[in-house]
Image (tube, rainbow, N blue to C red; front, top):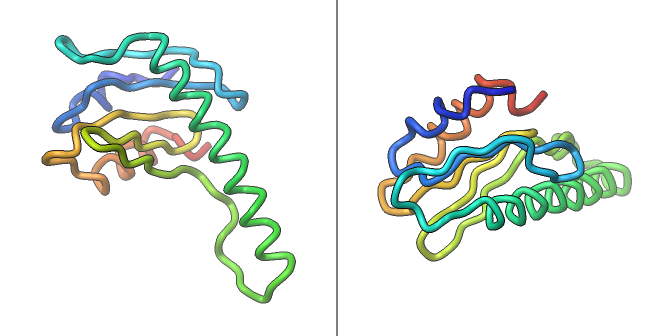
Length: 117
């Protein structure tokens, strides 16, 4: 299990989660005062897994049908919302307030934690 508190150290972190390849949340941390709850994070983790699966299918298809390479593998993505964004890499994710969010720092930390594994 990853140390989700490392993700919570990112500026504006509202929640962090770990999920399996089916999107089932296996661990989570929610910041005090956050509007997130376990149910919302569970739905978010399923959405992240589904989007990574779809993006992977599209990347594989694009590389197979064209001469363009470098789109596969898909390790993660960012879902940008109005007030917050979810940044994922592999089995890990963090929810950040958009105001002041450092997306690159989030990706770097997720990768250093083995998110793409």
